[in-house]
Amino acid sequence: MNQNHNVAYLDFPDEQRSLTFDSFSENGVQTIERPVYHDGMCICAELAGAGKIFISWNGALHKELNLPGGSHKLLLEDHIPAGVGQLTLAVVVDREAGEERAYRLVSDYMMEYTEYLFRVYKDQREAERLKRLQMQCPAPHDGQTLASLTKEKYEAASGEAEQVHRALGHLTAIDLSHMFHITLSLGDSQDMRKLADAALSNLGDQLRKALQSLDNIALNVEHARYYTDQQPADEGPQAS
Image (cartoon, rainbow, N blue to C red):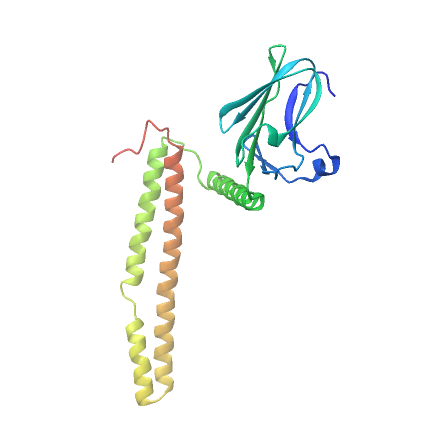
């Protein structure tokens, strides 16, 4: 036992189980599956001298234990209520508090771990997104402000929306449909093929321009929101 370290924690006395039971830590709380009764998990304590262990359950003090110095292994099931919840273990020896440990006891560890991995993945994606935006969106300079950059990006998005309107405002799809009906009626001549191919190419160009504008709109809106989020809360958007 480390005589300079006063601590209480959850563990199995069996070394093999101690090394292999599943858990993960998030925001300072270790999540494990609530052991079944008689499973052998203990509240383990290492005390340099006589002290107290404070056992809290779901944020409320549940039990206070007075223990002599040394190593202790107390069956978990004897000291906390049944069911799932959050357990906190705190130690005080000679009026000096030791390291506090917090645990979340759950009924389905694999489900909790899967959800945790999704949160980690989501946080990583968000961090990558912010890193990309920091590279794409330079800080204000030469009289610019975050508000003016937001306005500039929204105006660019508006201009692209007008481009979409122009690109889609004269679609020739109905003409192409008529050409196919004429082909069925009059025959598949070389002239009709040229007309149909030209109309199809024109329609494709219009749609590609519209899709490019839609991509630009989405990017400009994302940049505008990034600049808005960088503004201090007390400033807010500026009216033009």
